[in-house]
Length: 249
Image 1 (cartoon, rainbow, N blue to C red):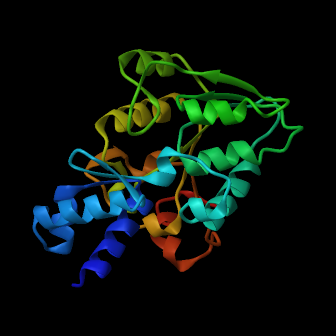
Image 2 (cartoon, one colour; image 1 turned 135 degrees about the vertical axis):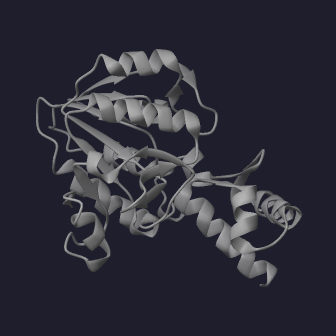
């Protein structure tokens, strides 16, 4: 495999899953970790990724921009955001996590919508503050430097005492058998607490994440009430998820 092709595949994995591990890429691409390390350094020097110890992060996950070219799968994420917003009603208490799709949801909320949002994401909270008629409650704690959300036992305890009507979370891995998965232990812990607290669980993901599995399980598919992608709900790619009695949007 040529270096350009390999780096293109690495960049795609980083953008889809927001975070990748050097060891996983080495196995996936069947090259040495030293080769992957050099690739990550070159991609980082070009400003295409953020290199961290043991792997890399997506630039779009770290810095939100309204310019279409700065956001991976911008059109797909905008479609997803519109579908999610169609479920929101005045008077709801909604728990929303972080990520570029949730920021897009916050950005395009109808101005007359009256919802109280709870969030562990500082960037999501800041975006929601621009909404004229919705209230925002930030659940604070130690901030993860990679995921940019509040983490730790205090946050989990606070979430335990909540009972929101709906939670809105993204995922880095989505598979009909493995369920919802992620690669960050602290993020998984918070997502589990969010799911346990919520009366209804909405998970969204671009279709490129379908049938992908990360190292740590968040929950089985049976814990998810609604799955939102940019695809038509009847698309054949969603058949296995539909069979698990999850509502498709």
